[in-house]
Image 1 (tube, rainbow, N blue to C red):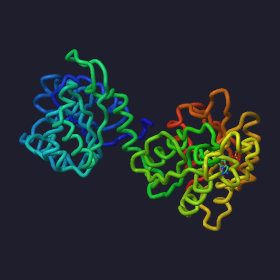
Image 2 (cartoon, rainbow, N blue to C red):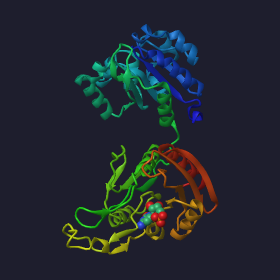
Image 3 (cartoon, rainbow, N blue to C red):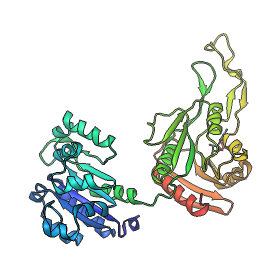
Image 4 (cartoon, helix red, strand yellow):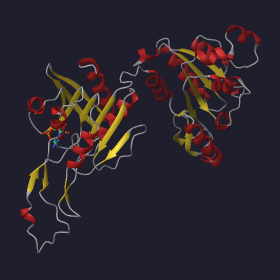
Length: 399
Ligand code: C5P
């Protein structure tokens, strides 16, 4: 993904904490990936790492003063604030968070933050006690609410000898965050509906039929689509997962509810059926708990559930793309292709389940199959596979 940063204009703000030495590594890797990195240091930062080091790593003279006539004559601070496509402050000290939260503009870095239209990302780093302070947490809440993007901090050993939250996120993680923030948003303005998780089909008020789906794949898809700029509706059966940020989640329990919610969200640009919908439901769930002695529990009558994705694919408000999943225990690709045709889908993601694979796991292995054939998307974390899936969708059947 390094190409994303080619010629992109990033201000790297460095404030005065011991983690400033890691900012040098970050400056180097951002530059190496092709970004134009303008480092802006506070006076305290210069006590930890020298401007000359940063200049050598980025090839650009460091800016450190609001009132430097020479630098201002080259590119004034307002111009510099407009030049930036993204500002990342790493490390951001407790004092830096406090100054940003109160809207100060008494040095170059805070002034740039006030004057920029670009997104501002912060990587806080400080002693764990300073991080835990109510004042710091209040400032953080204010900044988050105002749209600052916060990365970390991580928990672990600290330079001061303490252990706890306050370590700056690693440079590689920050680099990835910058890349993903600057990546072209290929699904900007598109609406995507995703079903996820299992469904539960009531037998009586305490029992139900269901399956082992954790919802992790569908939730990963929702996050990946959101990060590519899509408006995401996640229709979710019961799971333990938290609602992803900036995703509209509609909670459902049964297949019937999932069908109704799915139909209510038509049309959309794409519908992705990732839910493991229970194939059957009890014909008439009992109103009271069934008693072992009094009811013959071996004779619960079942009826087939509607096929949600096939209904969506045949709807007269059909989304531009309807994409399904097929979890198989054998002959996965052959069964997958059969379902592609039978359900009237544009593509189907095929995986092999059983022996701990796919259901509940954080990793998965998928094949993408469409009318033109199958491609192996490889084995990876569900989040990475979700990104690969959308890249494949964009390449093979653009929305
Ligand atoms: O037929 P099978 O359950 O293997 O098909 C899997 C695909 O169909 C998935 O995309 C799943 O979300 C969808 N499906 C559905 N409604 C059902 C059964 C499956 O939407 N009742």
